[in-house]
Image 1 (cartoon, rainbow, N blue to C red):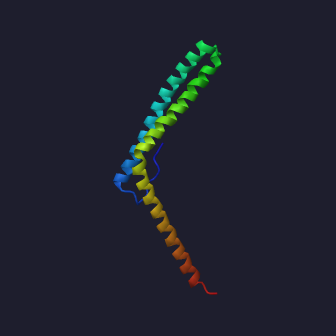
Image 2: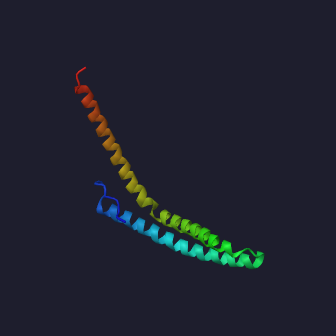
Image 3: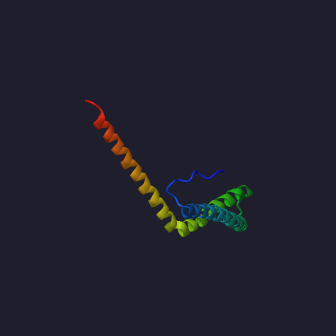
Length: 116
C-alpha cells in the first residue's frame, strides 16, 4: 500500500512526523490486538472453568479482546502524537482556506468581466 501524495505545503519534517505517527499507530494497534487477544483467551478459560460456557465462544472472546486492546493501544499512540498532528492539520486547514479565498476572488473577477 502506497502512502498518499505529499501536499506541497508540508515540509520534510512534517512528512517525517506523519510517517512516524502512521508507524506508531500500526505498531501499537497490532501490539494491542495481540495483548487483547491473549487477555480475551485467558478470560475465556477462566470463565469456562467458573461458569462452564461452551467452546464456541472462544473465538469471540479472542476477537473482542483483540479489538479492545487494539483500540486502547492505538489511542495511547494518538495521544503521543496529538501536538504534532494538530500543528500539521492546522497548516493544512490554513492552506485550504487560502485556496478557497483565491478561488472566490477568481470567480468574482470572472463575474465582473462578463458583460450583462
